Structures are given as C-alpha cells and as structure tokens.
Length: 291
Image (cartoon, rainbow, N blue to C red; front, side, top):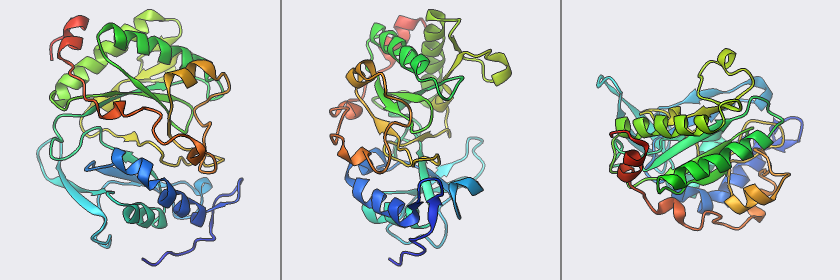
C-alpha cells in the first residue's frame, strides 16, 4: 500500500510522528489482532495532531481496500444498519493507522454472535487524573466481588487515567442480561466503599468519588482495545497487566506504557484467560438478579 506523510508529527510534545505510529501498529499486530477478530470497530481518527482534536468514524469508508474487513451491524431500533470496519491482519492495522486512525474501539462481542457479548468491560474512572491509588483500590475490591460470585476479571490499563476490568464470557447471555449483571456487580462494588465510589453518571453528582462505569455492557457501546494508542502526551497504550503487577507496583498508572516501551513486555500477561469464556448464570443467581 502507499503510505503517506510519515514524517508528520502527531504528538507535538514528544516528536512522535505518523510513521512511528504506523510502525508501532505493524510491530504490535501479533499481540493485538486476537483481540480484534470479527469485532465491529469504531475509529478515532486525527487529520493532523492530537492537539487539533479528532473525530470518530463507525462506518467502513468506501475507499478502504478489501483487506480491511466490513461487518454490517443492525441498529438498535431495527431500522437500518452500519457497516463497521474490521481489522483482521497487520496490513489492515497499518492501513488504518495511515488513515489517521490512532485509537481503535471495539464491541465486546464478535461475529457471528453479535447479540451475545463475549466480554464484560467494567471501567474505573478516577475523579482526579493524577491519582491512580483510588483506581488500584477499587480494582482490587472489584476482583473480590467477582471472585465472590465465581468469576475471574482481568485488569487493563486504559492508556488514559483509569483501568478496565474485563470479564471473559461464554457468549451465551444476550445484551440485556449482561447489562443487568453489570449494574448488579457495579452496585455491589459501590456498596463496599460508598464514600469513595459511585455509579452516578453526571459528574456534578459524583462529589470527588471514583466512577464505576458499567455502560460498556450495553449494545452498541465500545471500549478501547488492548494495545491501542491513546491521544495523550507520550503516546500511551492500553495495556493488559496482571493482578500481581497491580498490587506490587506503586508506580503503575493508567498511562504507564507507551508505543516506545510496551513491546518490551511479555506477550500475554493475561496467560490466555481472555479466551476462557465464563457463564453469568450462577454469578447472577449469587447476586440475586435474573438474566
């Protein structure tokens, strides 16, 4: 393919160019592609630099080459559909990066079972961007809540200020059931520390508390994918980590790893657990909710 404007600086404070981003996506493809397989994508694109603001693109452009996949997805109201791009190869990742797609967001469901998610993504969003301590404490409490109902969660630094806990699912529960469970586990977590945690959507109601965001369990909502680049100074990367790292490294934060450092890490810190789908049936019963 023809690559263009590779010397254009995308991260002005760091001198990181479009060529650096393209090269990163080519190098990280073996780690990243398993997390993208058959998933509808939403692209956060930047025409110039991260300081100029970007825009979101859900539909696959007509000029995308054939090696960028296309996946028709019906709208929630049943009226019409959006044809989302899908990245199934290193060539697709490189092409999208060359088109200015810096950050990839994906559905927590994959074709052909788009109506039954294979992941539950719980987002821990701190009140203060510089404070990761409350995020760490909330994540460890969430791990306990999940273990109490027989589930394993996997932590991922978002590359921004917070953390995602990903629960691998067996793709047997429809969206409404996953959403019901997400609200229940979120409420159970907030009950553990109501002075520090909240599920209040509006910032004016949070009063300095960390936001437990369960909204990514709703159909059509997306989450940043592992190893994608974020539009923040330093070019941080969404990075899967282990619970041992989260517990033991006080310096760890949401943006600890960048395109310059993340490839130095072991290739699978989740040790394959991402692909061990778990049933929500018993877990929902333990929380007293019906799916």
